[in-house]
Amino acid sequence: MAYKIKKTLLYVFLILLAITCLLPFLIMIVNSTRSGREIMTSFTLIPGSSLKVNWETVFGYFNLFRGFFNSLIVAIPTTILSGYFSALTGYSLAVYKFRGRGILFGIIIIFMMIPGQLNLLGFYNLVSSLKLVDSYIPLIIPAIAAPGTVFFLRQYVISVLPPSLLEAARIDGAKEIRIFHQVVLPIMSPGIATMSIFAFIGNWNSYLVPLILLNTPEKFTLPVMVASLNSSTDIAANQGAIYLSVAISVIPILIVFAFFSRYIISSISYGSVKE
Image (cartoon, rainbow, N blue to C red; front, top):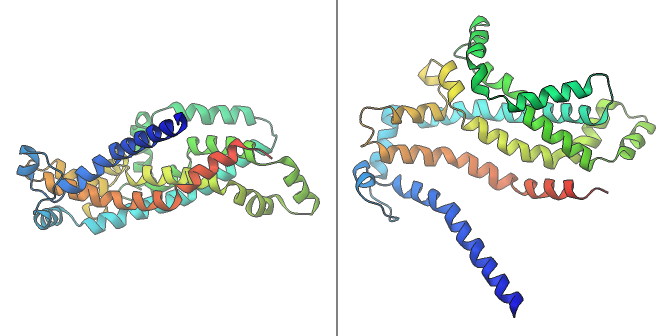
């Protein structure tokens, strides 16, 4: 009887927690259908009738689909490349013993603790000297070097990869690069997928660096375009349009998380049990 009561209370707590987490998304969707005046004067969870007006307001400031495409141009290559090269770096730091490995790993940890905003001025000067301002290249290439992802995948390799598996592959005559791609990479895939989710979300939501480096409005990523509504002269009337653009911009994040969130659980379970 006591067990059933505890189980019921646990389910009630989890349901309330889920409602609390989903409530902001519900408010965002509802407010995207309401006018700015309604949002500023009242609160309700009942959808309004201003969805078409808000849609027209958004496209009056920018092309939402163009911003969608621009953000995908930045987020997808960065996610793929950072996942692959971080896995390669983390694997080499975990498996190979070479001089300076500890120093290199220490440098990676130090870079994890340095806020990116501190080197923004120097980064802009570098990009400007390379004549890459108003280009997607400085948004993609530097993001490949992700110290946090390297640190996580190094620890993940140590926890899930048995050295005997590598020795067996070497005895069979496999080259090191083939061992990485055919043996190690499938084992690391849950950890890579987990970090790729956060990499995609971070690059999709990136605002400060694209704002500074991109000058052409047609090249703006979606967060920069949405910010133009916040900086408009009629911000109160545009509240519904802001909620609508934010709600649409969240869709790719929800899709990525829905398809790959299971890897978060599997990576945790893989890392907790070492055969």
